[in-house]
Length: 94
Image (cartoon, rainbow, N blue to C red):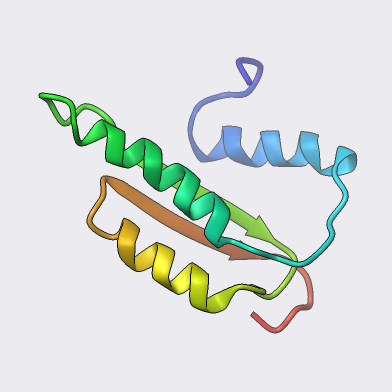
């Protein structure tokens, strides 16, 4: 990742570089990754100083398959030092 510049431009470049090498498939379950990142954020709150903030960017081509579980995971994560950004690409009904 050091080959990419920082910021949004770096994210776009990294996404463009990875896209030809990935295969999209379903189901589209978001709760496992939300819970995974939330665990890191929860650990960060145990430190003496608030020195870490987490941003989870999910780029998806499908509708969320585990909506109830994802909704619960997002609500639980809402008190943690993290943001969740979900971007839908393609023709799915987002």
